[in-house]
Image (cartoon, rainbow, N blue to C red):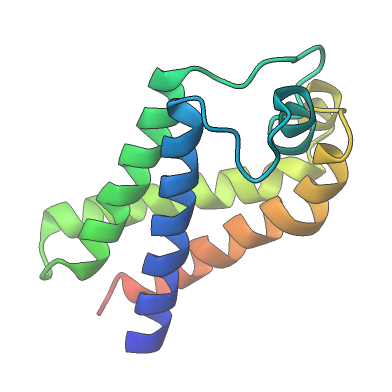
Length: 134
């Protein structure tokens, strides 16, 4: 379980760092904003990355989950991890929801969402759910 916990914490921390970078206007891993939008946002007609506040909120939420994973058992930890499981399961299921597909048709996002983003979120949700009792 310790390996699973460490792996999930590393993944979440890395994703938080990337969101923080986007929040300060550093386009990573693609330097061109329009290409990055098509790759990681995918929303119809979107041409700009989300602003600092949404990116910071995602980064902060991920760091809170990382902190909860390393915290002692408590109702606060359980609540945070339970919320994270729900968020990751919902986000993980979205690539196969027709309404989401219509909202996010840009490529390569649409393909990456089905092949990478969605499945990764589902795996993170399963992993966090597994760790909730530890």
